[in-house]
Length: 273
Image (cartoon, rainbow, N blue to C red; front, side, top):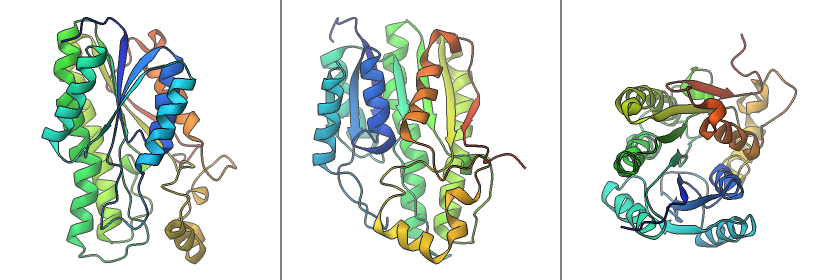
């Protein structure tokens, strides 16, 4: 085990989008990054996922921000592979201080109410993958004995049911993102004696490749009311990845040292009724 005393952050879904933004922001704040990404597509998910080329760009940007990164190609749905990958980063950088469980997928526009495969793939990534991330990192955080912060990236669909259309895809997304809240609250109880805080962040639609792709463009063109902009109170169509990263930076900071077990919206007023 490395005796390196640097601050270390594990980030899943780090190859692009929100995960890349979090990695660069944390690198600029002085963290070494253990970045995890599948770097491949999931057959049931109707848009391209990140590639190794995307991951290389994240690594470049982290280096440019002054940080070090260990890039690990692993599937959050596979606990053993995820654990092995994270352990290689721990061997290089030392034990973990911060976890951002960010990896997730969506299936908007898939209308089949009986599509069991897409339901399982979304839940397995968005919920089981978050549990796997916690399970693979918490022992390292406890071992370090310096406390820490675990942040689970959920969604406003983890707090509301708006947008449900009866499809397996939307049911899976809402159920998985609500499930993340349950994981967060249970983990907050479990790890509080170790001074490890656990919170979830709930963005409205974020301007990332999950939203900006050909499949989603056709979904929005066919049904403009399905766009995130239809639910935001502030007159913005989407928030930016850095807006979520700012919330991450707050939750890991001393300014949030007594905040745990909380759901933090970054939603442009989406939740206002």
